[in-house]
Amino acid sequence: MSEILTGLEMCMNIEVLLLILLGVAAGIVIGAIPGLTVTMGVALFLPITFGMEPIAAMALLMGLYIGGTSGGLISAILLSIPGTPSSIATCFDGHPMAARGEAAKALGVGIVASFIGGAISYVILLFLAPAIAKIALKFGPYEYFSIAVFSLTMLAGLSTGSVIKGLISGMLGIMFSFVGIAPITSFTRFTFGHSELNAGFTLLPVLVGLFAVSQVLISVEEKYRDDHAVLTETKIKGFGFTYDDVKGQGSNCLLSTLIGTAIGILPGLGGSICNIIAYTVAKHRSKHPEKFGTGIVDGIIASESSNNACTGGALVPLLTLGIPGDNTTALILAGFMIHGITPGPLLFRSQAPLVYGIFVALMIANVMMLFVEYLGIRVFTKILMVKQNVLMSIVMVFCVVGAYGANNRVFDIAVMIGAGVLGYGLKKMKFPLAPIILGFILGPILETNLRRGLMKSSGSFLPFITSPISGAFLLIAVVVMVYLFYKGITKKAEKTAA
Image (cartoon, rainbow, N blue to C red; front, side, top):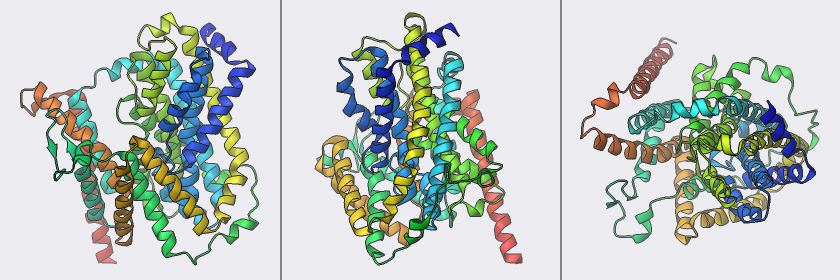
């Protein structure tokens, strides 16, 4: 407690508080703009921290991290375009609510879920970080492969219509992830002689193309539609929702938070996966799974509480082991190095006041995020009143800038446009887009850890099954698939009987 109070004292000065507020506000704006990501925001602000005190620099970066992760819900709900990969699942129910005039409610539920998910994960980080890190150290290639296999079972759950279409979409994503130089062996594959394809496809251009560009094309197709007039007369009280709107969502929020924290702790997975998995789990647990995707608060709560919980989880391996949990924490690690701080097991002894100062900064940033987004709800809903042709033109400009800024390659802009045309075609044919992204992210994890595991076991598959943690995840994956298959047969039989 004395170290926590010391950390609180370090943060309770006007300079640090203003830097946290600046980071949160800038992060929300960056996260809300399609094509820009939290990682880009941290990269842009990193040089500014050179001349700062360590606690001030870390406070600014933590504010950016939290604000950027939460800010993605704004464009996800209002435009059906995820501002960040962490907000993909927020689109599924958030935008349908906005389309029927409940944008304020959707935003309010998402903001509060973000706050709760983040708060719980930071408490876990504060008290359990070293113990959790010891467990995470036991995960090797066998365990990561099994987690990826288990995550792939979520593909069927993401299909609102045909399960077959969902699986086809997932396989497309995995197929695209294989383009470029193979892991371990470094052989080029599926490049067809084009050197631009040697590096493969980057997540950001593919994500922006599938969700943002395809949505722009659909808006062009429906340019004469104007379904936002209802918003001009909407009166917003508080966060835009009542207790009855979220009654009974406590278990959904808590479970999604734990999923987000657990996935965040495992290096290399991150918020882009946890929000989809939490959404799918919430859908399977629900008494009315058929309502998911039509605009209900359950889906928003699952997605937003998990992706913000992932931020606390990703900081566990960073602070305790010196291993970044995702791309953003890799840049935060660079921020530590700039100020001569080496994260790892000794950090809690050598720099205890700073560590607890970071914990306090996280919690303050989380409260500021809630406050800033609460004040912004009335402003955010005004976006829907802008004419579609103006709004989508601005979105398209940001998409091009974001796709190019990922790797400074014009080729990525072409990838984005190609992915957009593909996404538009798949939407017209009622294929879900989320499984493509899930497959695209999990493909390299699956392949890399399969190869490493086989090298470690001299070509034997047996350790993948006999390793306790790995075997448990594979067993769960089989049980989930059997359950989904049985559920599908039962539902088909009920329709036939009806």
